Amino acid sequence: MKNKLFARIGMGVVASQLALIILSWLLSAMRQEGVRSLLSSEGIRWFIGGFNHIVATPLLVCLLLLLVAVGAIEKSGVPVLFAKNHPLTYRDRIALRVSFAFIIIYVVIICLLTLTPHAILLSATGQLFPSAFSRSFVPLLAFGICLFSVSFGVMSGRLKALADVFESLTFGLSKGAPLIVLYILIVQLLASVGFVFMS
Image (cartoon, rainbow, N blue to C red):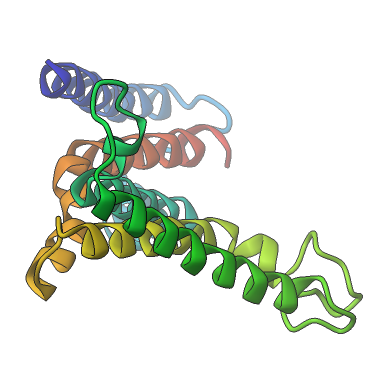
């Protein structure tokens, strides 16, 4: 069901991109002020030559890291903790305590790097926002989620080998692949609109 929805959205974005290409060509041929054609030599160079730069944004990195974190949660068995009709076993309770211990240590390390005077992750003026911490908030969050999930999965016996741990970290990427494709299509469409109408 979700894949059908993603496919429809994707086809809508592709159709919008094609319509924009034709519209930009028509408006440019009519000598409209401030409109550039995507079918001109400049437009084709921009579209092909700038593709990597347009797609490679911090938003893509955040999307990939969050998909890794969500996959780690799902594959390591963390949702069991929130299931009403699934009582925790003794091993699950031990795994939960160990995972919380890891998270506490992780949070303490982050606090030492951000809240102490002249902390490493603060800006040059000593501010938290903007700073290295604020720019890396999503990666830090994703790493914390992965740390909790993987430690819970290993201690509870759901992730038995290194291959299982690696699979848990790639699981979200495979499930979220439609989102990555949609991101690429939408970002390119928005950039194309900017190129055509914002000269």
